[in-house]
Image (tube, rainbow, N blue to C red):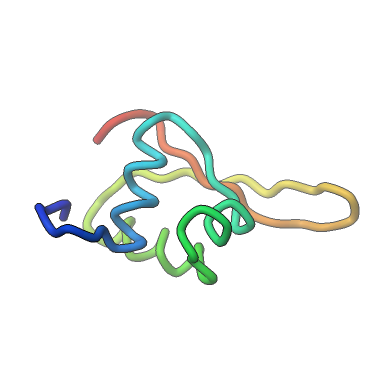
Length: 73
């Protein structure tokens, strides 16, 4: 999936972010990578077999999914 292109796709950027052990929320994905549809990018990453976990977060009356992985794939 990752290749030597000069610019990385949103999926590649999100995958690298997750593989460093960090979780990611929709707001972070938008701010860091310009990604408006994080759940769609996570779906794209899960299709080829990347093991990505999700959990629902309830914060200040707002509910959103936060994604993480258990380590480097």
